[in-house]
Length: 118
Image 1 (tube, rainbow, N blue to C red):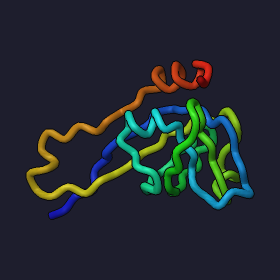
Image 2 (cartoon, one colour):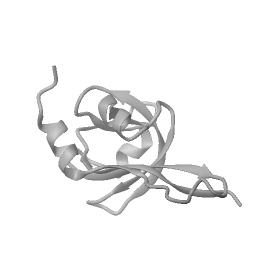
Image 3 (spheres, one colour):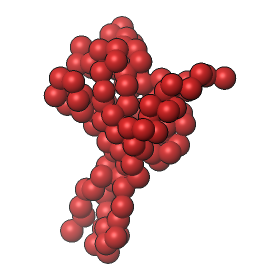
Image 4 (tube, rainbow, N blue to C red):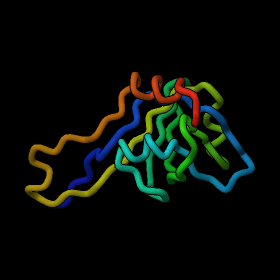
């Protein structure tokens, strides 16, 4: 039986901008994506800690510190909201034994988002 498990999570990142006129997606700091093993155009679920809103979208790479909610989903988040970004993968029997998802913690998010962009 194939099972879907959490692959990675960016925990409590701060939304830096929203753009309702953009064609959908969430723009995520490329460094966050690398640490969380997220590919551009990969499907992710977004959980808004402030409002409880949950939605699915896809990843676009962004500049350092950027977490941007775009398109219709911009109605579900505001600048400075905290969000949890989760990716999943499917695992065959035997692959999930000992599986540990990658987690980018709130402290790591704060540190990277507070540092000036180069």
